[in-house]
Length: 196
Image (cartoon, rainbow, N blue to C red; front, top):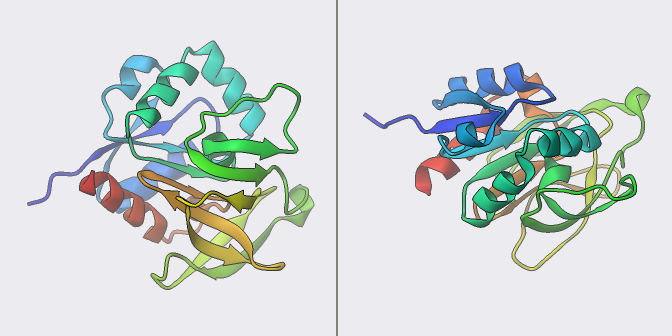
């Protein structure tokens, strides 16, 4: 029997319950993370969609920003969806003045690149060569550019925009797989955590 990895969900803002449900369906033990001591108890972490500037400010208030950076620098697997992708980017475009990220993935991410809330949409994409995945884009970012160590896992229209990447133990999507009922992306991340 394979032991289920313990995967935390950054639970200060965003679609926490939906990620917990998807992680459990993918075979992980999912817990919420709001404080540094809770972060130390997990094998991997999901940073959900939400609002990236609010996440950054709350991470500072709850004294989680530096511990998150240290754990990621030390090799903890992390997956960021939508705002979580922005949080894992080394560089962002369209952020507010002084906006900080956790970093870790050598990429430039453009905030709200697909447009406003009214421009939200769903699309079928090929995720990491694993088949078609239904993707929900809500005020979603896209990846403007990646470094040489970053693997592009999925593209979307218009113009083959980069919407999923991986760099070592870090995974990011600009879409929300937790809203579709398809746990393929969460299964992929759970496998990543098990391997490390």
